[in-house]
Image (cartoon, rainbow, N blue to C red; front, side):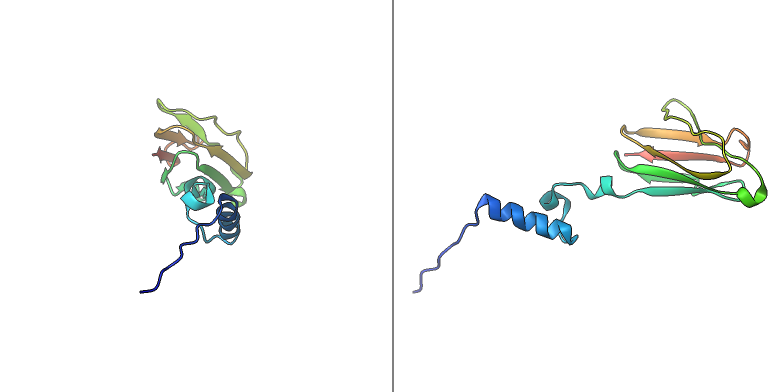
Amino acid sequence: MHAHRIHIASPAAIAAAAVALAAFGLAGPALAGASSASASSHTITLKNIAFHPAKLRVAVGQPVTWRWEDASLDTQHNVTSTGAARFKSSPTKMTGTYTVRFTHVGIYHFECTIHPQSMQGEIIVH
């Protein structure tokens, strides 16, 4: 019968391996020490006088970016928070982006106050 040796890596070696794996995107959230949910982001496009998508589901801590793409229609838009759960509303503009990081669970409603009939949306933060 052969005896097997068990080698236990030092904490420094484990940490170095985790950093190396994370650098190459091979580590999961627990090993890398960062949540993959907080690293990803979502984009809502303002185009053809509508939000695309109009409904979005994100995890707490994830940023949402609104991207204006209606300059060719020569119209301005804004992203105005409505409803009980609120976030800071955007300025009115024709081009550019606006980003909000959602830090609390809730359902956030928004609209363009210039085009409220066709531009309404909802973000569900879980």
